[in-house]
Image 1 (cartoon, rainbow, N blue to C red):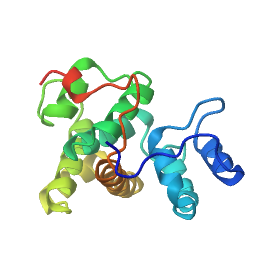
Image 2: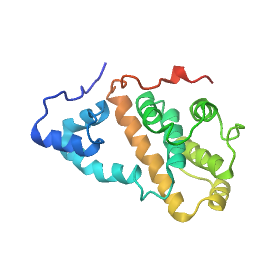
Image 3: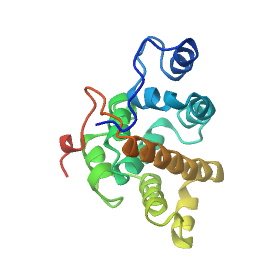
Length: 187
């Protein structure tokens, strides 16, 4: 049960405008955004950064971005955000069932990861989750396959989705209808 219930329509004009800006045209706002809208100044402040993290200016392409987001949300046990991203972006990112299972339950050494860059993304996400740092050896390995803008984007993408995961879990945002569940992915 939600600790902070998501706003339900009809929305005030300012809330409707903000939610409309956060969703693709014609799409109903997701529960997380409707929960955030309970603090509209916060939601307004967050929107540009969230748009950057999911936009074309991020130095990580869609597939790599989603690898990082799904891994981070899975490690945070945030079924809500993991499911939303898998539902909306999983197919567009070209993620296979084996890759989804690995991001959810596996390791960067699983056979499904074909490139050193993919393995580095997962290792960095895991290190940031576990220690809030990247040791020198991992940094050197990541630097071989990622440039400085990509590393900075990777670090902040992990941090952003930790914050999103913390908010969704702690507020007990209700799972989106039709979104995948952790139980849907075999270990």
